Length: 580
Image 1 (cartoon, rainbow, N blue to C red):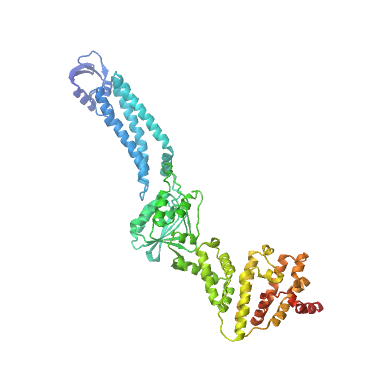
Image 2 (cartoon, rainbow, N blue to C red):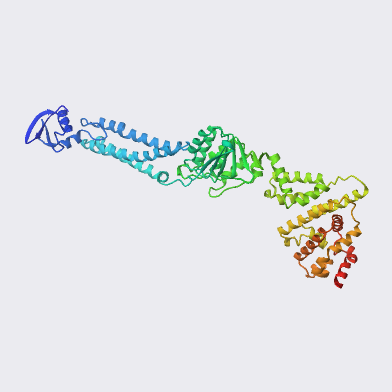
């Protein structure tokens, strides 16, 4: 200011002095805010503070009252442009910086920006209102105020449209991470890192620290239900930076865990483990868009997965999980191998190994031993057929059902036996037995005992009874195979079957010898028929191997206890039983 000023101090009027001198005295405390000052060319006295506020206000430096041109320039340079820059930074952080190894600093910056924007707007509006009060024209006073009002409306809309993400940020800052409980350990002398638990916000940074401290790690083992997608992307980035070559799933790897698992070059699934897929779910509303599943789609496609598999995975609602079986995962290149009994097996080796384990188990071992004695080539073919069906994901991979399907579908039991006539006759008779067993087990008890198709009564045969019958038949077949001598004759077989039915006769009477008639008259039920057969088979199983083989061949040739062919012979134990 070039105008000279007077001021009143201690009851006296002093001056005139240049205005900068009055400002300096005020800063030193000599002149107070209520000290009266007066321009030398005016008769009006004003408080020192009022003059100071009129000359300059925050956030701009003090100076002379600006004209409307300078007012507009200052509003643009110090008000609107910084405010626009803050808004741009707000949206840039919100939409672009979500995949860092530790994104929490960016979210903190976003929260600070959301507080700084309204604060800066309030200060700018206060300054503008004061500075424009000295302007009398529309362009000098009303237009800037209208611009700030519109800017305020824009800010209110911005805060309203981003209320949910801002609320989520407040929750992240004030509440514990619900996926924050995870553990990291080591196996194989420090070569394997084991990650257990969900994917929390701190997981990628913690994993990065552990890998830096353990440079020998070349594989990571996951046992995780999933967690935050941003953590899944962060862990995938950490594994890529550390050049981890192998990822293993133990028990389960679901949701965001699959993203990290599929990002590693070689992927192994332990035999009892599973992969769970679904579409991306994110707690941030700004992530919900048609591109929400891009992370999954890009990673899965890079692994060479077929598009149909990818579509099925990301079409599964985020509230549930899709658990494809091992065959489907191998066929669609979601995994490279399966860890079974300590070995990492590709598809060509895994399914035969599963079949071998089943064939050695209690359900199939007796039949497998019998086939190994009488038909090793057939057993090998059966092994290959079951492995192929499992690899094709037949019957949802239920190996018991798949094996039964392979048995029923096999019409060529090739018994390669060399030797004398008795051995050839033995082989031919056993071939008939095995063919009958192949075609109708475990319905064989009905087909033999009733002489008719078992489909009508098979519903009464429970899975447990089917399993028991399968084991019993295999065990008897094995016993017959172990006898190297020529088998007894068919006539001997008739006597042996008659002997074997004695226990069932004592329980059910004449119905044992004419089951079809007893069924039609309602004297017996399908369950009773099965009990008759099981009882008789147990008696046969207790015989010497050669006798058991003769009795089983007699039944396999269709000569049942109720059949016409053995009616006279079979009644001999009935008569003796009645005399007792």
